[in-house]
Length: 280
Image (cartoon, rainbow, N blue to C red; front, side, top):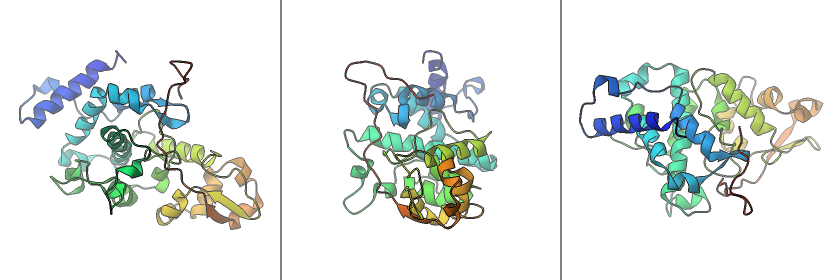
């Protein structure tokens, strides 16, 4: 991590000056990093096998993470509006994943992100994300639900973003151990969709009796995923595992939905070791 610390510090210092109304020297204010190097470095360090997140480690050393979130908040609305669609989509996917993690860090210890909602409201309606200025609502805060269903669903050319956003839960898609970027985003999303669909802990590995049991995500996001060219069944045929695509029943398969595991997608070190293989 030593190699990335200076970059993170520079972002943090520049953002702090901007937030305080100060003026940083021109050479000290970095342009927005569409390669998300700081975020990728954090993910590479804190995301383990199975997409599990080392929340405890990140909580103990979160300065770089907080600085990265600050860099998102510092993006001017006019600049953001001029970005290509793929760059804006990558931004919102990374923001969703980052702020979901922030929510967990700020309210630990909890067993599930759903424990962080209000008495009569879902955690996904909780307005805590200070990016309203990038959605035509300067000074206001957004919710995870708004980013998913109002921003990404309307602006993304493909509904495959549903396999990239991670709501800090065991049945969510695995958190990618690197940031999403505008360059190559279409392929990144297709790869994550294939990985998610082939995961037997999230979808049934085979069609049985004309029924395919899939993630509850296909139920919740049916309207959005149905916008895939040819519909949901074509999505399954294009991106599903060979055990599905080789079955002639796939075209007329009935979908049933698996129970969703809302347990936190938290990584814990092995009791007999201080290290664990990380996902690369």
